Length: 263
Image (cartoon, rainbow, N blue to C red; front, top):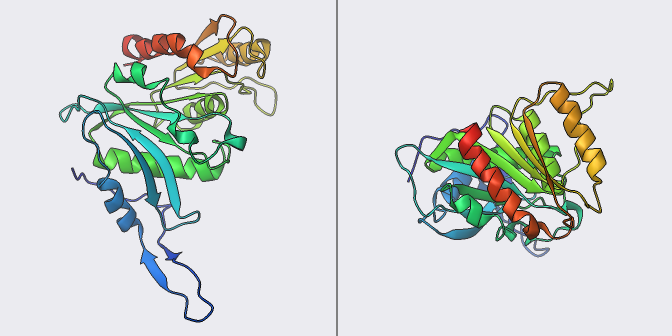
């Protein structure tokens, strides 16, 4: 299905190098953002499918890797929710990290959501490279798929949870809510004043998190709540930071929160 779509102003045309041969002139193939848009349009979004995509782009690194999960029921009239899923362990994550969607998929299936799970390419989610990538991919998704733009959500675990905080704070015009699991995000300004985050957040944290102590995360949650933020804070009982699938009962509650209190 083709929908009206305009490339964001930040997207520029560039060239894509095919390779180098010392005996012959270097062949250069022109690849534009129009070509990228056409490739995205051809992604299989048959109901209930999971598709792993390598999308060629004009800029370095010349490709984006991400997973698309299509809902079993596609709402062509009202549009479906879109959930951006950010994986954890960014620094040591490999080329398959974006495929770690098995735990969250059942809960998101209950709201008939499209799921976009990009690979961080070993770059923190808040870095400009990943901000640009996410904005581009979401723009393409909204331009081509039946998405309800009032139901865009970001979620993630660990580094992905920190990215969830970031995108809810700095992209309120995009996301209606964030669900952060096992995260640690400083909500104080450079003058040590708490910052208000206008987008609702559901924050899940274990009482025995080995990497991000509960006390630190709870302090930053309390600080931003004091500034007027809408944050639901849920303490998971005695779960390890390193077993994300154990959090899925709490994640199901967070998805229900979207239905009951956000949408």
